[in-house]
Image (cartoon, rainbow, N blue to C red):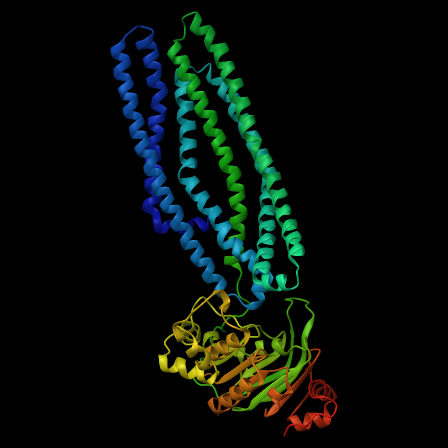
Length: 578
């Protein structure tokens, strides 16, 4: 946790001013019982109204000075905490941006959302409490103990018994709550995951009338979180009753011992009142420290989770002395590639894959669902790394390239068309932020998107809803293709990115791509035979293996699986496309 608090260094002025102003407030608070004792002993007991008035005005002035100190501390501690949270959140977000797909799979997006929001808010709150309560309470406790000992060393023995009792309770409380707070955060991760899945798939839920099922699934996650949270809070709630009991017993003990001395005249009444006030301040200050440490245990869990994110290094990084991809010929080779998603012993989804794509070729990949097609193309831009074997681009292992340079030369349209909140123009420019309007329009035309964009009221400035919700599936796919084409990549990868496009539009798209990608390499995953029929080479995948490759005519003559796919789409007597 101390490492995370290094983020406060940049805001040291606020970190310094907040405790200094709190020290001012504490000094004023310590002065109040002393002045009260003077009013009782020299004013009330002796009937001196002038002393009561003058001392009362001093008390009022001290209270105002304390108010200024407390207000200033609150302001500066809040500024420091908010800026600490903003800096930390920014760095955590940037760290997550460096993660590989495998890192994201392992931590989970629901957990990352919790860490970037709830966990960092916990730490912000902790920082503010450290600069206020954790400064005020120890200073107030120490100052009150000193003042109490100065008033009556004999009565101070009561504090010597009460304070250790509070610390014992505090230790037991923290020991019991720490594992519970850790569990609370895990339950929050689970709850956020359920929420994300439900909101992302709410249309599917409605279409299949699964509202009751989703409600029950959320209720279970919500109930688990609630139960663990209640258990933790029940333990925290023990603190106040124990404090109240120890405080009341201490006051009774002070009254019994000090009252005798006051009656026989060896101890002034005002001093007894002041001592009781200091005892109350000590015990409440120690209790505040106890509550602070309970919160600290909760914040420690959050800090550990944030440090885990910051300490996790992407398993996909540029080499120590990487090569720059200045221009790409587009040659792609797989050399005995095996791949598994698990870090250590995951099930292999690709087994001993070897093939070569010549520069400028159009390559199609076809096979049943789960055959490993998407996993295969994800290895080329290093979204994942091969478990065994090598993937080469232009004769160089992709792991030897500078990562950003490699990906800038590869345009990829993923299986799921993800668009961002903003305009259509912004989404197409996502592939090339400095693209001109002419380049944007040219990319849209090549992707067969210009016509429907022009028909919209705002044209290219039409705002898109979250994830492009105001577009059809086919329109989203075409914008995703335009986003990849605007890069003018040496290698273009289309991962089943025309599945929602009608055959007429797809035919025009393929023709435009053939012209645009002349001299460049295109690799496309497709489900329809009609989409791959003119490819220079077709790879047929089955259960993670490359079982055949060749042209449409060659595969139709020699590959049984390809024949089965063809017959399933065109019928037993279907015409052979030439």
